Length: 388
Image (cartoon, rainbow, N blue to C red):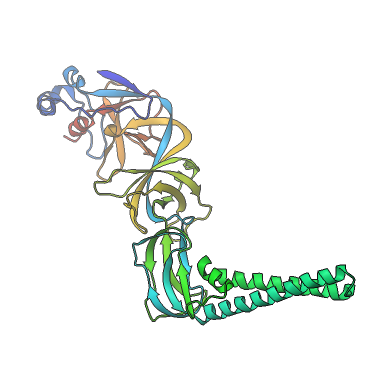
Protein backbone atom coordinates (compact mmCIF):
# COMPACT_ATOMS: atom_id res chain seq x y z
CA UNK A 1 0.00 0.00 0.00
CA UNK A 2 1.41 3.38 -1.05
CA UNK A 3 0.95 6.63 0.83
CA UNK A 4 1.53 10.17 -0.38
CA UNK A 5 1.16 13.65 1.05
CA UNK A 6 -0.45 16.67 -0.62
CA UNK A 7 0.48 20.17 0.49
CA UNK A 8 0.71 22.39 -2.59
CA UNK A 9 -2.39 23.50 -4.54
CA UNK A 10 -0.64 23.19 -7.88
CA UNK A 11 0.44 19.53 -7.43
CA UNK A 12 -1.41 17.19 -9.77
CA UNK A 13 -2.24 13.64 -8.61
CA UNK A 14 -2.81 11.39 -11.61
CA UNK A 15 -5.82 9.16 -11.69
CA UNK A 16 -4.40 5.68 -12.28
CA UNK A 17 -6.54 2.55 -12.28
CA UNK A 18 -4.11 -0.02 -13.74
CA UNK A 19 -5.37 -3.49 -14.52
CA UNK A 20 -8.90 -2.65 -13.32
CA UNK A 21 -10.42 -5.57 -15.16
CA UNK A 22 -7.88 -7.98 -13.64
CA UNK A 23 -8.52 -6.58 -10.17
CA UNK A 24 -12.28 -6.97 -10.53
CA UNK A 25 -11.90 -10.58 -11.69
CA UNK A 26 -9.54 -11.50 -8.84
CA UNK A 27 -11.74 -9.68 -6.35
CA UNK A 28 -14.81 -11.65 -7.37
CA UNK A 29 -12.87 -14.89 -7.07
CA UNK A 30 -11.55 -14.03 -3.62
CA UNK A 31 -14.36 -12.00 -2.07
CA UNK A 32 -15.89 -15.04 -0.35
CA UNK A 33 -12.74 -15.47 1.74
CA UNK A 34 -11.41 -11.89 2.01
CA UNK A 35 -14.39 -9.55 2.14
CA UNK A 36 -16.41 -8.91 5.26
CA UNK A 37 -19.97 -10.30 5.39
CA UNK A 38 -22.22 -8.06 3.36
CA UNK A 39 -24.33 -5.74 5.44
CA UNK A 40 -27.75 -4.45 4.66
CA UNK A 41 -28.05 -2.73 1.34
CA UNK A 42 -28.57 0.66 2.95
CA UNK A 43 -25.62 0.35 5.38
CA UNK A 44 -22.20 0.92 3.79
CA UNK A 45 -19.55 -1.52 4.99
CA UNK A 46 -15.78 -1.31 5.00
CA UNK A 47 -14.14 -2.85 1.94
CA UNK A 48 -11.41 -5.42 2.60
CA UNK A 49 -8.83 -6.20 -0.07
CA UNK A 50 -6.14 -8.80 -0.59
CA UNK A 51 -2.50 -7.83 -0.40
CA UNK A 52 -2.26 -7.91 -4.20
CA UNK A 53 -5.30 -5.69 -4.59
CA UNK A 54 -3.91 -3.16 -2.12
CA UNK A 55 -0.92 -2.58 -4.43
CA UNK A 56 -3.23 -0.75 -6.82
CA UNK A 57 -4.70 1.53 -4.18
CA UNK A 58 -2.96 4.87 -3.66
CA UNK A 59 -3.47 6.88 -0.51
CA UNK A 60 -3.01 10.55 0.36
CA UNK A 61 -2.29 11.60 3.94
CA UNK A 62 -4.27 14.75 4.61
CA UNK A 63 -2.26 17.76 5.79
CA UNK A 64 -3.26 21.35 6.40
CA UNK A 65 -1.69 23.68 3.86
CA UNK A 66 -1.82 27.31 2.75
CA UNK A 67 -3.30 28.15 -0.62
CA UNK A 68 -5.00 30.80 -2.73
CA UNK A 69 -8.52 30.11 -3.89
CA UNK A 70 -9.68 30.38 -7.49
CA UNK A 71 -13.20 31.72 -7.83
CA UNK A 72 -14.99 30.63 -10.99
CA UNK A 73 -18.11 32.52 -11.94
CA UNK A 74 -19.93 34.14 -14.84
CA UNK A 75 -19.79 37.72 -16.02
CA UNK A 76 -21.18 40.17 -18.56
CA UNK A 77 -19.01 42.30 -20.84
CA UNK A 78 -19.55 46.05 -20.81
CA UNK A 79 -17.81 49.12 -22.20
CA UNK A 80 -15.14 50.80 -20.12
CA UNK A 81 -17.30 53.58 -18.73
CA UNK A 82 -14.25 55.82 -18.41
CA UNK A 83 -13.73 55.48 -22.19
CA UNK A 84 -17.27 55.50 -23.54
CA UNK A 85 -19.89 58.19 -23.85
CA UNK A 86 -23.34 58.76 -25.30
CA UNK A 87 -23.52 61.76 -27.61
CA UNK A 88 -26.68 63.81 -27.09
CA UNK A 89 -27.89 66.43 -29.54
CA UNK A 90 -26.21 69.72 -28.54
CA UNK A 91 -28.83 71.74 -30.43
CA UNK A 92 -32.32 71.38 -31.85
CA UNK A 93 -33.27 71.00 -35.50
CA UNK A 94 -33.59 68.44 -38.30
CA UNK A 95 -30.65 66.24 -39.28
CA UNK A 96 -29.39 67.11 -42.76
CA UNK A 97 -26.54 64.58 -43.05
CA UNK A 98 -25.13 61.66 -41.08
CA UNK A 99 -21.40 61.36 -41.73
CA UNK A 100 -20.52 58.06 -39.99
CA UNK A 101 -21.87 54.55 -39.60
CA UNK A 102 -21.84 52.08 -36.72
CA UNK A 103 -18.42 50.44 -36.50
CA UNK A 104 -16.47 53.44 -37.84
CA UNK A 105 -13.37 54.55 -35.99
CA UNK A 106 -13.42 58.28 -35.21
CA UNK A 107 -11.06 60.85 -33.74
CA UNK A 108 -11.90 63.34 -31.02
CA UNK A 109 -13.62 66.33 -32.65
CA UNK A 110 -14.46 64.50 -35.87
CA UNK A 111 -17.83 65.51 -37.42
CA UNK A 112 -20.54 62.87 -36.97
CA UNK A 113 -23.62 64.63 -38.36
CA UNK A 114 -24.87 67.98 -39.61
CA UNK A 115 -28.04 69.66 -38.34
CA UNK A 116 -30.02 72.59 -39.70
CA UNK A 117 -30.23 74.28 -36.34
CA UNK A 118 -31.67 77.65 -35.38
CA UNK A 119 -29.76 77.26 -32.10
CA UNK A 120 -26.49 77.42 -34.02
CA UNK A 121 -27.61 80.41 -36.05
CA UNK A 122 -28.71 82.28 -32.93
CA UNK A 123 -25.46 81.51 -31.11
CA UNK A 124 -23.37 82.64 -34.09
CA UNK A 125 -25.34 85.89 -34.36
CA UNK A 126 -25.02 86.53 -30.62
CA UNK A 127 -21.27 86.03 -30.84
CA UNK A 128 -20.98 88.48 -33.75
CA UNK A 129 -22.91 91.13 -31.81
CA UNK A 130 -20.91 90.52 -28.65
CA UNK A 131 -17.65 90.82 -30.59
CA UNK A 132 -18.70 94.13 -32.13
CA UNK A 133 -19.88 95.51 -28.80
CA UNK A 134 -16.69 94.45 -27.05
CA UNK A 135 -14.49 96.04 -29.73
CA UNK A 136 -16.41 99.30 -29.50
CA UNK A 137 -16.35 99.35 -25.70
CA UNK A 138 -12.63 98.57 -25.63
CA UNK A 139 -11.92 101.44 -28.03
CA UNK A 140 -13.94 103.87 -25.89
CA UNK A 141 -12.18 102.65 -22.73
CA UNK A 142 -8.74 103.09 -24.34
CA UNK A 143 -9.61 106.63 -25.53
CA UNK A 144 -11.01 107.62 -22.12
CA UNK A 145 -7.89 106.36 -20.37
CA UNK A 146 -5.84 108.73 -22.52
CA UNK A 147 -8.23 111.61 -21.94
CA UNK A 148 -8.32 111.01 -18.20
CA UNK A 149 -4.51 110.98 -18.13
CA UNK A 150 -4.58 114.48 -19.64
CA UNK A 151 -7.38 115.56 -17.31
CA UNK A 152 -9.76 116.02 -20.24
CA UNK A 153 -12.59 114.01 -18.66
CA UNK A 154 -13.78 113.40 -15.14
CA UNK A 155 -12.90 110.39 -13.07
CA UNK A 156 -16.54 109.31 -13.15
CA UNK A 157 -16.59 109.26 -16.96
CA UNK A 158 -13.33 107.31 -17.01
CA UNK A 159 -14.62 104.71 -14.54
CA UNK A 160 -17.86 104.28 -16.49
CA UNK A 161 -15.97 103.62 -19.72
CA UNK A 162 -13.79 100.99 -18.07
CA UNK A 163 -16.83 99.30 -16.52
CA UNK A 164 -18.64 99.21 -19.88
CA UNK A 165 -15.59 97.61 -21.50
CA UNK A 166 -15.38 94.92 -18.84
CA UNK A 167 -19.08 94.11 -19.24
CA UNK A 168 -18.82 93.94 -23.03
CA UNK A 169 -15.80 91.63 -22.81
CA UNK A 170 -17.71 89.35 -20.44
CA UNK A 171 -20.67 89.18 -22.85
CA UNK A 172 -18.25 88.32 -25.69
CA UNK A 173 -16.67 85.50 -23.66
CA UNK A 174 -20.09 84.12 -22.69
CA UNK A 175 -21.19 84.10 -26.34
CA UNK A 176 -18.01 82.24 -27.25
CA UNK A 177 -18.69 79.60 -24.58
CA UNK A 178 -22.20 79.15 -26.00
CA UNK A 179 -20.66 78.29 -29.38
CA UNK A 180 -18.18 75.90 -27.79
CA UNK A 181 -21.05 74.18 -25.97
CA UNK A 182 -22.59 73.55 -29.39
CA UNK A 183 -19.35 71.82 -30.48
CA UNK A 184 -18.55 74.53 -33.05
CA UNK A 185 -15.05 73.91 -34.40
CA UNK A 186 -12.23 76.49 -34.11
CA UNK A 187 -12.15 77.33 -37.88
CA UNK A 188 -15.84 78.27 -37.81
CA UNK A 189 -15.37 80.38 -34.70
CA UNK A 190 -12.40 82.11 -36.36
CA UNK A 191 -14.54 82.82 -39.43
CA UNK A 192 -17.23 84.43 -37.27
CA UNK A 193 -14.58 86.45 -35.46
CA UNK A 194 -13.15 87.69 -38.75
CA UNK A 195 -16.58 88.57 -40.11
CA UNK A 196 -16.54 85.88 -42.81
CA UNK A 197 -19.76 84.12 -43.85
CA UNK A 198 -20.50 80.66 -42.46
CA UNK A 199 -23.01 78.00 -43.51
CA UNK A 200 -26.42 79.29 -42.50
CA UNK A 201 -27.79 77.31 -39.59
CA UNK A 202 -25.46 74.33 -40.10
CA UNK A 203 -24.59 72.88 -36.72
CA UNK A 204 -22.15 69.97 -36.54
CA UNK A 205 -22.32 67.13 -34.00
CA UNK A 206 -18.75 66.08 -33.18
CA UNK A 207 -17.15 63.09 -31.47
CA UNK A 208 -16.24 64.05 -27.89
CA UNK A 209 -13.62 61.27 -27.64
CA UNK A 210 -11.67 59.00 -29.95
CA UNK A 211 -13.04 55.49 -30.36
CA UNK A 212 -15.54 53.41 -32.30
CA UNK A 213 -19.10 54.41 -33.17
CA UNK A 214 -20.89 51.51 -31.50
CA UNK A 215 -24.41 52.94 -31.81
CA UNK A 216 -26.00 55.28 -34.37
CA UNK A 217 -29.47 56.41 -33.36
CA UNK A 218 -30.33 59.14 -35.86
CA UNK A 219 -31.10 59.43 -39.58
CA UNK A 220 -31.42 62.34 -42.04
CA UNK A 221 -34.63 64.30 -41.52
CA UNK A 222 -34.99 63.33 -37.88
CA UNK A 223 -35.84 66.26 -35.60
CA UNK A 224 -33.47 66.60 -32.65
CA UNK A 225 -34.16 68.15 -29.26
CA UNK A 226 -31.21 69.88 -27.65
CA UNK A 227 -29.79 68.03 -24.66
CA UNK A 228 -32.17 65.06 -24.82
CA UNK A 229 -32.03 63.22 -28.16
CA UNK A 230 -29.39 60.43 -28.14
CA UNK A 231 -27.49 60.48 -31.42
CA UNK A 232 -24.45 58.21 -31.11
CA UNK A 233 -22.46 56.17 -28.62
CA UNK A 234 -18.69 56.34 -29.01
CA UNK A 235 -16.49 53.92 -27.07
CA UNK A 236 -12.84 52.93 -26.97
CA UNK A 237 -13.27 49.16 -27.22
CA UNK A 238 -9.56 48.35 -26.85
CA UNK A 239 -10.30 48.10 -23.12
CA UNK A 240 -13.48 46.50 -21.75
CA UNK A 241 -15.08 45.84 -18.40
CA UNK A 242 -16.32 42.42 -17.34
CA UNK A 243 -18.81 42.52 -14.49
CA UNK A 244 -18.33 39.23 -12.63
CA UNK A 245 -20.90 37.91 -10.15
CA UNK A 246 -19.77 36.99 -6.65
CA UNK A 247 -21.89 34.90 -4.28
CA UNK A 248 -21.64 34.00 -0.60
CA UNK A 249 -18.16 33.27 0.74
CA UNK A 250 -16.54 34.18 -2.59
CA UNK A 251 -17.17 37.84 -1.84
CA UNK A 252 -14.68 37.91 1.05
CA UNK A 253 -12.02 36.19 -1.07
CA UNK A 254 -11.91 38.78 -3.87
CA UNK A 255 -10.00 42.04 -3.48
CA UNK A 256 -9.02 44.93 -5.72
CA UNK A 257 -5.91 44.01 -7.69
CA UNK A 258 -6.59 40.25 -7.88
CA UNK A 259 -5.59 38.66 -11.18
CA UNK A 260 -8.37 37.29 -13.38
CA UNK A 261 -8.85 35.48 -16.66
CA UNK A 262 -11.86 35.74 -18.95
CA UNK A 263 -12.99 32.90 -21.22
CA UNK A 264 -15.39 33.95 -23.96
CA UNK A 265 -15.73 30.42 -25.33
CA UNK A 266 -14.76 29.16 -28.75
CA UNK A 267 -11.15 28.66 -29.74
CA UNK A 268 -9.86 31.99 -28.47
CA UNK A 269 -7.29 32.07 -25.69
CA UNK A 270 -8.26 33.22 -22.21
CA UNK A 271 -7.89 36.98 -21.76
CA UNK A 272 -6.00 38.21 -18.71
CA UNK A 273 -7.27 41.09 -16.61
CA UNK A 274 -7.40 42.53 -13.12
CA UNK A 275 -10.10 43.22 -10.55
CA UNK A 276 -10.36 46.98 -10.09
CA UNK A 277 -13.50 47.28 -7.97
CA UNK A 278 -15.75 45.09 -5.82
CA UNK A 279 -19.28 46.42 -5.46
CA UNK A 280 -20.89 47.41 -2.20
CA UNK A 281 -24.51 46.61 -3.16
CA UNK A 282 -26.22 43.24 -3.52
CA UNK A 283 -28.25 42.77 -6.69
CA UNK A 284 -31.82 42.07 -5.46
CA UNK A 285 -32.56 39.78 -8.42
CA UNK A 286 -29.45 37.57 -8.42
CA UNK A 287 -28.34 38.10 -4.78
CA UNK A 288 -24.82 38.63 -6.10
CA UNK A 289 -22.25 41.42 -5.83
CA UNK A 290 -20.52 42.67 -8.96
CA UNK A 291 -16.75 42.69 -9.31
CA UNK A 292 -15.33 44.80 -12.13
CA UNK A 293 -12.55 43.15 -14.13
CA UNK A 294 -10.65 45.34 -16.61
CA UNK A 295 -9.26 43.49 -19.63
CA UNK A 296 -7.46 44.52 -22.80
CA UNK A 297 -9.45 43.89 -25.97
CA UNK A 298 -7.18 44.86 -28.88
CA UNK A 299 -8.71 42.34 -31.30
CA UNK A 300 -12.30 43.17 -30.40
CA UNK A 301 -13.07 39.61 -29.29
CA UNK A 302 -15.19 40.85 -26.38
CA UNK A 303 -18.51 42.49 -27.23
CA UNK A 304 -20.84 44.42 -24.97
CA UNK A 305 -23.49 42.21 -23.27
CA UNK A 306 -21.52 39.04 -24.05
CA UNK A 307 -21.69 36.32 -21.36
CA UNK A 308 -18.28 34.97 -20.34
CA UNK A 309 -16.68 32.71 -17.76
CA UNK A 310 -14.42 34.42 -15.24
CA UNK A 311 -11.76 32.91 -12.98
CA UNK A 312 -10.38 35.17 -10.26
CA UNK A 313 -7.19 34.20 -8.42
CA UNK A 314 -7.69 35.38 -4.85
CA UNK A 315 -4.76 37.09 -3.13
CA UNK A 316 -6.16 36.13 0.28
CA UNK A 317 -4.20 33.28 1.89
CA UNK A 318 -6.38 30.41 3.14
CA UNK A 319 -5.40 27.45 5.31
CA UNK A 320 -7.19 24.12 5.12
CA UNK A 321 -7.31 20.59 3.73
CA UNK A 322 -6.97 20.05 -0.01
CA UNK A 323 -8.09 16.84 -1.70
CA UNK A 324 -7.48 15.89 -5.34
CA UNK A 325 -10.56 15.88 -7.52
CA UNK A 326 -9.83 12.25 -8.44
CA UNK A 327 -10.58 11.12 -4.88
CA UNK A 328 -14.18 12.37 -4.86
CA UNK A 329 -17.11 10.18 -5.92
CA UNK A 330 -20.83 10.86 -5.73
CA UNK A 331 -23.65 8.67 -4.50
CA UNK A 332 -27.13 8.14 -5.93
CA UNK A 333 -28.24 11.43 -4.42
CA UNK A 334 -25.24 13.25 -5.95
CA UNK A 335 -23.65 13.74 -2.54
CA UNK A 336 -19.83 13.69 -2.53
CA UNK A 337 -17.95 10.98 -0.62
CA UNK A 338 -14.45 9.49 -0.40
CA UNK A 339 -12.84 6.31 0.89
CA UNK A 340 -10.49 6.48 3.87
CA UNK A 341 -8.26 3.83 5.40
CA UNK A 342 -10.08 2.46 8.46
CA UNK A 343 -8.54 1.20 11.70
CA UNK A 344 -9.32 -2.42 10.76
CA UNK A 345 -7.29 -2.12 7.57
CA UNK A 346 -10.35 -1.84 5.34
CA UNK A 347 -11.59 1.15 3.43
CA UNK A 348 -14.54 3.11 4.80
CA UNK A 349 -16.87 5.36 2.85
CA UNK A 350 -17.11 8.86 4.29
CA UNK A 351 -19.29 11.77 3.23
CA UNK A 352 -17.45 15.08 2.76
CA UNK A 353 -18.32 18.70 2.12
CA UNK A 354 -16.69 20.29 -0.91
CA UNK A 355 -15.43 23.83 -0.69
CA UNK A 356 -13.89 25.91 -3.44
CA UNK A 357 -11.84 24.54 -6.31
CA UNK A 358 -8.07 25.07 -6.00
CA UNK A 359 -6.37 23.91 -9.18
CA UNK A 360 -6.94 20.14 -9.41
CA UNK A 361 -8.13 19.88 -5.81
CA UNK A 362 -11.14 20.68 -3.66
CA UNK A 363 -10.98 22.44 -0.32
CA UNK A 364 -12.60 20.13 2.27
CA UNK A 365 -14.17 22.19 5.07
CA UNK A 366 -15.93 19.21 6.69
CA UNK A 367 -15.70 15.42 6.69
CA UNK A 368 -11.92 14.92 6.88
CA UNK A 369 -9.18 15.66 9.39
CA UNK A 370 -5.43 16.09 9.22
CA UNK A 371 -3.82 12.64 9.30
CA UNK A 372 -6.66 10.83 7.52
CA UNK A 373 -5.47 8.59 4.70
CA UNK A 374 -7.74 9.05 1.69
CA UNK A 375 -7.87 6.91 -1.45
CA UNK A 376 -6.98 9.07 -4.45
CA UNK A 377 -6.47 6.27 -7.01
CA UNK A 378 -8.71 3.21 -6.95
CA UNK A 379 -11.83 4.71 -5.39
CA UNK A 380 -13.97 3.52 -8.29
CA UNK A 381 -12.79 -0.06 -7.76
CA UNK A 382 -13.57 0.16 -4.03
CA UNK A 383 -17.05 1.44 -4.79
CA UNK A 384 -17.60 -1.47 -7.17
CA UNK A 385 -16.51 -3.93 -4.49
CA UNK A 386 -18.74 -2.31 -1.89
CA UNK A 387 -21.84 -2.45 -4.04
CA UNK A 388 -21.50 -6.14 -5.04
